[in-house]
Image 1 (spheres, helix red, strand yellow):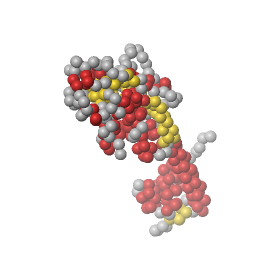
Image 2: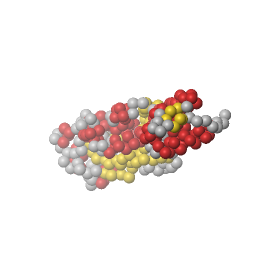
Image 3: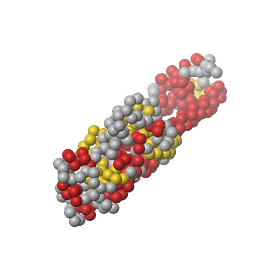
Image 4: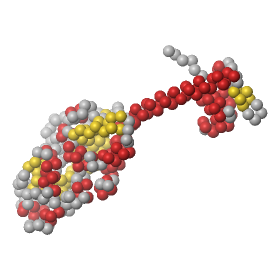
Length: 319
């Protein structure tokens, strides 16, 4: 039904002045002048056709009509405030569905997620993983966020070149690759001093990322390091990246790893980089969300937190 209401400014001025019984205090509360309060109340009285205040030399008092009107207006503003707060609470809390690549989820996000939970206790994270969020080298392959294990995630983390049309895309961090291993291999028989020394050790292969667009291979790294005498195909292959990482931590061989993803393992000494050579690629991890919902408070909060977390030093993030 349509409502014929006085101007909101006039109602707010009367409610505040009636509560304080002072134009001056109402003006301070609403950040206007006392003259502006007096003007708005006069407009309200003219609109209603009644007198709401008796104006005396140094004070004001409510008329009988004003005294009857004020509690109902107080109640109305209180209900409006409750309605606004309930909407804000709904937007700032609730469930946030996040889908990420498995390696990113296990080695980068999960060890840090407690920080977001502590900062936003009213937001419940539903975390799912999908290798489909890693762009493939096969031409014409289209990956969509909806293929995650959770239906229609609010946010996905993608690894690739960042070409995700129709989406809000925030670059999280670039990725570089270098051999990583257990520190004991540095001083064991056939120690690792130069890339050529890799010929004496097992190379560990992460088959899940071998066809990823932008994920470095042993062939690429060895070529860049001019270690042509090392057989890039030798060594065990793993269908899951976590198995490959565990094998490297246990000293079974040497992994070609993404330094930024495995930063916490490196900071903790579980993995070390025996050589200074690093292979850069043009691929990165990206935050991808729907353009229409990217600025929703809970989604925007998670986007900001991810970006801030990616800028923190690894040693600080580990605490």
